[in-house]
Length: 169
Image (tube, rainbow, N blue to C red; front, side, top):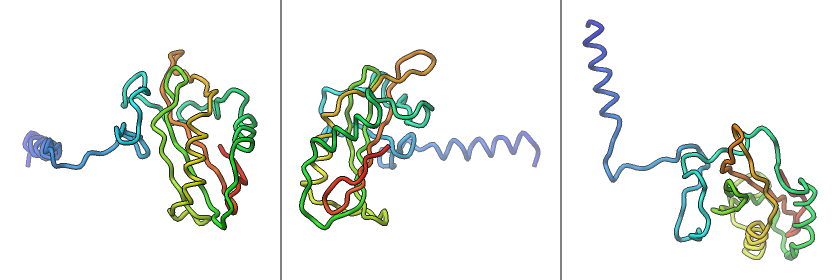
């Protein structure tokens, strides 16, 4: 088979892989992207640059960017969280977007046991952490090439018997 023929065959294969069938599954740009869900998300929050230009937290290479740094976040949650009497322990991750003007939205929660196996927590714990995360103000505006950008952020809570043991990042 000559080069020209091989190129035609390869091009045909690549074109046939690009499906426009409306029943085909759609995939996120990156693992962990948070698509707008009108059932969960309010209409007031919008990324400044659209869904395809939201940077992952690690793209910024500046670490946590919060007014008062990590200690301010820890103090906020330890002051405002009301412990729940339970024997539940594990991890709760709250992931969200910070837009180019410092607003937050599209909050998602992931709950797991101490062995990182997905499982639900008592709603008194998870809902409280989610609501406190939504009220947390002080996220700094991130820039890339001196332009403000939208970025993903997360908070992870180590829960021990219904109490916050640790707040990360």
